[in-house]
Length: 306
Image 1: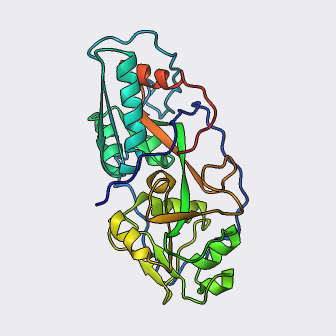
Image 2: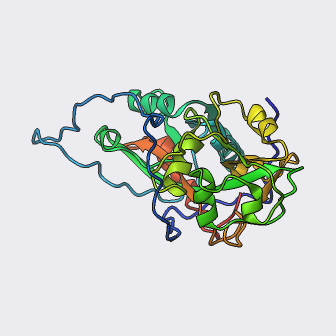
């Protein structure tokens, strides 16, 4: 698979108290007769967190003061899906450079592997693009937002359409209501809509942030990618296709062009389609996690764009 380009610009870390970006969305698409199933986390143990009194309790929200020193030999095991890898690597390098003798082990995994590994105590932090479910919270997991990424609408570099789109037009394209580029002011040519595989985490993010929970319907001009091969997806765009991708993956990709939505590009502060990245740990946090999360809080900088 083709290697994605590095993210543009210096990556900064968000303040833990991440401010949500407000955006008004249109009505969600109507689910098709045979919608694709959502990717779900495997069933978690049903046992609640039991307190001293024998009843259930909510994990205590812990504080993480920024560390001035971290003991040599400290190791943090940080796992996440592929699209979190570069951010995780940046944190790893910065932490290890600041505190000599420490180690941050980063690895790529699926959502399910990261969450279940965290519950089992096999890793320290899971990097995920979604909030926790109730079942996950009941296992003592706590999610802290640390940064964010955007969902970009992309076309092939040879696509003659050179304009942006409105949110309403995006909905109409992915609901099968706009099917020709001429309806958008472009050339007369059928729009080839490429819907991402449900195996990709971007699939659920697009449904939530763009379609308001709706589904992309079955239609002659809509193709569902069956696998998770990003290279095949990019090649399928050709000169008439459109799809969506993580901005962090396509920001410097030379084979595609990113379309403005309502006049805004993904790096804009007010861009509509944004999703936070969460670092998830199991309460109570071990000393390594306390130092690592506390270190992130040192960087209280302006919101950045990947």
